[in-house]
Image 1 (cartoon, rainbow, N blue to C red):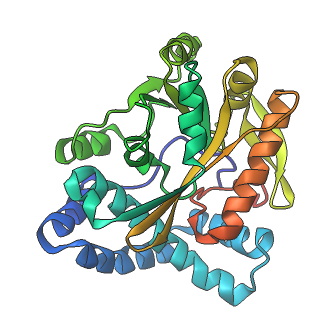
Image 2 (image 1 turned 90 degrees about the horizontal axis):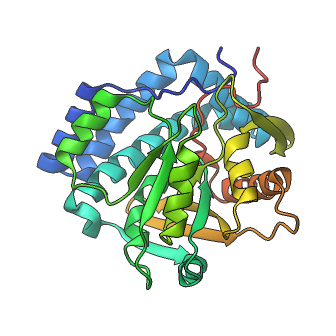
Image 3 (image 1 turned 90 degrees about the vertical axis):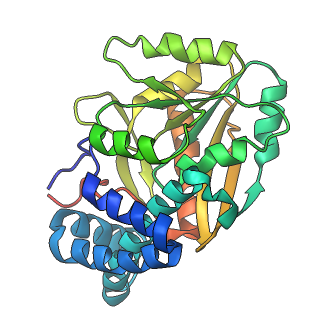
Length: 293
């Protein structure tokens, strides 16, 4: 079992084409129905991810054995829903959903300071639809997303062909650290720079902190970067609350010393708070706590 994220997520172009067909020709209800079979398939054949999500439910959330087993299936199902929702919302079907915000004024206040800001999120909920929320801000918000370039390019190419063009600018993380200059330039333009702070890749620098009662590794880069730049730092999550309703949560970092470790510990507290509200929206399907060797 891989104890670290390997940099790729599962899925095929054909699978995405099938779901896009159902969304566009039949409707979201039919696409959600097909997910029952997909979630069942993963429960039967994805041994490693099953063990990882079961460990999270049984040992970190302290669910009973039976409740943990049932919620392995539910976790896959909800994850599939967030993927379908992302496709639908970015394909001119955003009006089919409702949205509310909690703390979005913090992002607006940050933009008014005219020096940009850093948002740190996690692989919980459906942060990729946050662009919809940012489009409703009082202040015009340009968004840059700091990301790796090792996800399935064939899937990305297909999805780009069926959805409207995103206004998010991608900043690719590079070994020579040149992406830091791009981040600084984006902040100088009063842009929001978004980073996920939960997936450590083997061989890269990491920090450790407690999450749900056990120590885990986190990528050092987001926290080192945020601690060194004199801009506001916020923790932001977009969570699915019902089939067609999403809720954005934003919280501003109050870390007194702005050191990397302090930011990380504040981040893990916010992730813990979010997972207690939405336990099935933890989407790190690998041995996150390095507990399954």
